[in-house]
Length: 123
Image 1 (cartoon, one colour):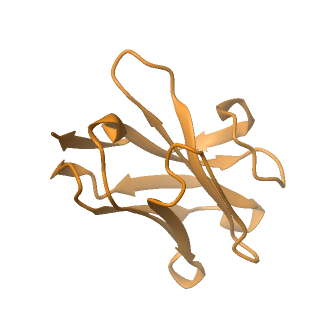
Image 2 (cartoon, rainbow, N blue to C red):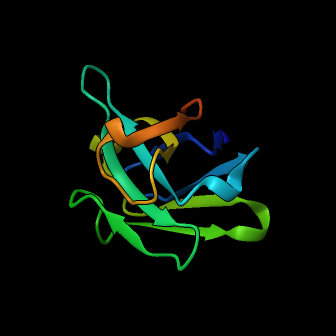
């Protein structure tokens, strides 16, 4: 499966932004789609994941209550709605598909990655 993330930009603290990730190729073999982010000088970290069937979701504690992940199966697109943004949300955001039929939170279990999209939150 090929993934393409978009929607990043510059936003003030407290603002909102929505990221999109379009999946193409052999999407029928993909169980879920996750979002990760990497801040400058830090390791990539899990943000959220959603299953294509059923729409089960799971969030990192750091974004719970502020971010929402949802999908449009007809468009093979997963969205990440980000509200109440903080400067510490700054980073490159990646979408990825897991290697297995699960909703993992560690990047090791993800096999397909799209190019990232940059989010910068100014204070």
